[in-house]
Length: 259
Ligand code: PGA
Image (tube, rainbow, N blue to C red; front, side, top):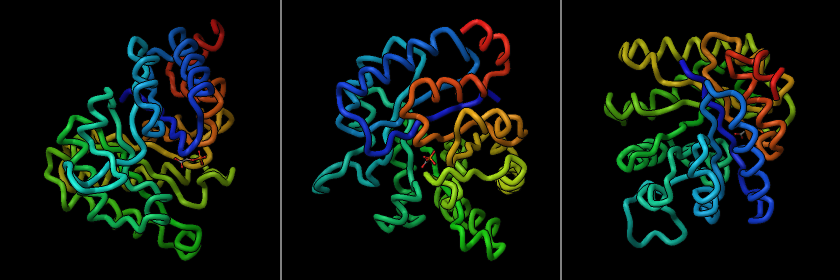
């Protein structure tokens, strides 16, 4: 499976900085990691900027959230249709920061996923356990519930068009990453869960997220069920982001030597 590395800029960046960051990433990725799909999910106001800079590059772009509604009286929301107008490929949904700060439920996350798919976007559905849940040995139960609750509301065809990002909440922005083997175990069980729903779901990409950096990326990507990464903080540094993309490449040594 081709690996997918997605930057999640969160609420960071201004027009001038974005220009430099997008330019640097696209320039460096022209020459390396050709077998990796790279994408950046940026704040809404800069979608036109991303489209202008990245249109002729091989980097995709997307949004960090999407409305569950089609259009109408929903002040402050941005629809999937609007994002599609700016060439977005991806929409992150159900990020733990949204689950926590905006009380997002699985039902809402499923509706958002469906809207995204309807308008040709790929939802990146985030799941993950808290530190307390991990310490209580409830990781698997929690992430299984999160997957089931969303997938129960999607058709099989919709489910096939999603990406799942496993992001342990205790690893997000903390500098603490799950050990590659720990992450692999969760990914393997999520994959089994998906296959038990329908064998065609074996192709749903499973990204890992939570303090991914160039130092730990290669070990994570070596795991058989880690199909890529959702990268927060490190995606704001173009060299770091590109190094992570390169770590996902199967021709890593060769490209490292050249670039
Ligand atoms: P982080 O964020 O890489 O800064 O931990 C990941 C995310 O929240 O998607």
